[in-house]
Image 1 (tube, rainbow, N blue to C red):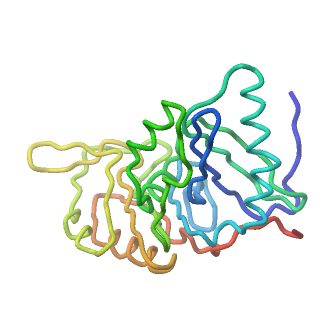
Image 2: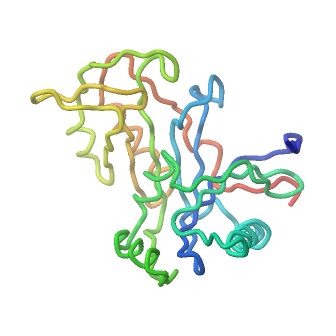
Length: 249
């Protein structure tokens, strides 16, 4: 086991996600998620309490550094071992003073990063995935809506520890009356004509807007219209600023 200590001088974390057919790859829009339960990155880790995406998140120089020093060597190494990878590749990064450091790889989209990413897609995802499966991915097919997106996770009280389920959820229709808002279900189920909670992370309130501030404003306005007993969500998603960079770079 090799452990590298990178905490001094770290600036932020970044979710850097691509899709590849084993030879060609395309970058998805950059995202950042918030793992801690409470505002100010306090409390226990969760599956994710929110995420946001804006092009301003990732400066060109940092993007090129990640591609050349991490992404392309990883894909080349997999191919050299006879296991070329097809699908989504999630690279969780810490941006340290000495440059980007890999925290984890996942063979999937992140959650709630996926909600923020899909909200900005301006292409047919099914067609792109068909190209991935057939080895004919063309990066230029991935077109993105300008502006920004944000996703707020509405969680059950007690999550990520013990929590109760079966709580009626109100206000969903009113929330989606706000322009650019889409409420995505996670830990819910329908009983008769009623939606009730059935998990720890209950809903993902996702919004798009011309700026990050606009997207966040719509998402928070929508969240305020939703009610269920002991509902909890962070009030500081996306408040750390638009640009991620390694300090000193």
